[in-house]
Amino acid sequence: MARAGILVAGAVGLAVVAAGVLASTNFLGIDLPFFKPSERELVTRMTEVTALGGFAVTFAESDAPRWQLAPGQKLERFSLGDGQFTFARLTSSGALDNETPKWSERGLSFTLPLEFSNRSKGRRVEIGVVARSSQANSAGAFSIVYATQQAGNSGWQVVELSPIFELKTFVYTVPSIDGEFGNSPIVVVHSDADGKGHSTELLGIYVKILPLADS
Image (tube, rainbow, N blue to C red):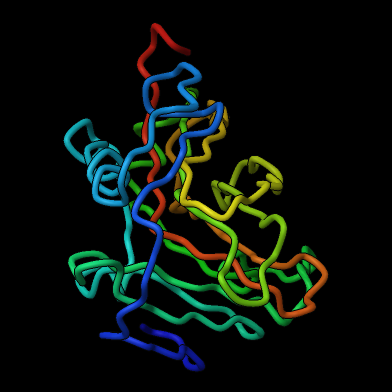
């Protein structure tokens, strides 16, 4: 992790419920309350978007350098189940501050490549996050935003949590600006808008450009 103040609890084995129920925004696009994908399936399906030109970031050791942590945030990483996967617990002790000039200073974030800004110009992008309520000091909901850092943002999306890992998605239309983007887009997560130190647990986040037929 590039920012200070990150508490890493690697190699901590936890007894975790090994299944999650997909909510209304499930991978098949239909409601299947009886369908319970494992964390392995959730991570696999999330990372599959990379084959389609999208980006997925997990909390595995290889992805750790991609995350940035703002002041007032704490990130802990834990092994999941048999240790093949990693989830993170984000705790936000600082209130959500939209006056801070840099998006990276508003929570836990990762930045996409600049070329993604220009590929997605005028297109709809889907942002997906796999999350659940924390097993300790849980937040009932967390906030997430996609920002171009140049020509608008999605606004903070408030996502309700349940005790099991679920995929939650939202869609944002990237403005079609004249010329090329000069800034890279960013995704930011904040676990407690009031800054009372509540936590959210995350498996990862993806961003993909929707096909024109879906736009």
